[in-house]
Image 1 (cartoon, rainbow, N blue to C red):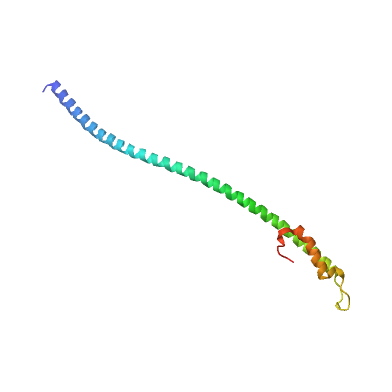
Image 2 (cartoon, rainbow, N blue to C red; image 1 turned 180 degrees about the vertical axis):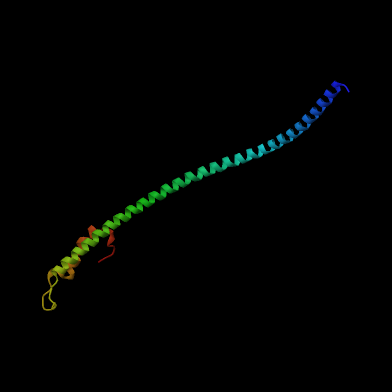
Length: 142
């Protein structure tokens, strides 16, 4: 056998192996291209989800801001009502102390004449005098 014939046979075998490898490589590349289209779809869906989430976050922030403002208003009104209630309580305690000081100390109340500071008409006038300071907290008290 001739040396050139051996070289040609080896080259033919190597060429055949290269053709087989190219066929395998082409199949893998075509599968990768198919998957690339799937990746594009996935990325598009992911972008849409991000846009939707961003819109939802903006709406949530505006809702939270509105709720915070409402809560601040209610808290402010509650503090004002609490202050007003404390004022009413203190006023009531002062009136009760004045009534106690003006009431007779003995057990025989029928023997002593009623003092003018403890009569119902005087108490009603005192209550009427307190109504403007107490505002709407009294409501329909007479």
